[in-house]
Length: 322
Image: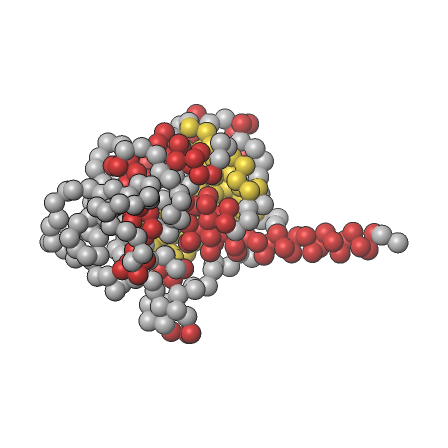
């Protein structure tokens, strides 16, 4: 199906949809380094422009609108988060595009903190807003490690199905489990995920394989905690703009910080996915991305509708032919 992507960033969500066979026809982001990364890996269909300035007439018609709208105001890592944070209003730009283009479906992504912001009233408001423009809406918290990502990253996914579309979206069933229950393989550990990557201090031919020399500390706080190589990594995080630093996880050997390439691997990006910008920018792009493997699991769920559509079309055609 044809996809329009908003708040595309470095393209993690889009890559997952591309892996599932969908066609990204238009994308948008404001961060120039992330846009260059996107163009290098996914194509020239991305527009570097403030979403507030985007004219809906310039956005092509599509089947699905996707977008991980900026979440810094919603994050539990932001102790100053509140309902009036202006960044919390960016979802209304997603709402504006969806209302104008009327796609069959939309998928929006945000941090776990959105569930508790305003004691749940903010999420209820967002769901009601999408419902009021003609969509059946649902939201669910998913764990990235359940879908083969070596990271304990939890994200909320809001899915909307246009009221006149005969389709019930089902969230993907896990492919992995924490302890191998139900016959599923265990979560992938960060140690296993990085085991075959050469040290960035040794000769290698990997792109973006450089790391921050910022001093290691072990106080249990985000970015300063001991990493257990036998478990998935903690959540990869980043500030959402170019005005602050980034929080880089320790390597599982706990002797240095992860390189950009290692952090991208923890996010499930392929090794040949090249990031643009300086090291701090690359860390930030990776931390803000949706893990492609998690995006792929969600994107595949829409294939059920497309397959049913083609079967119905073939049946209709066969009946029309004498």
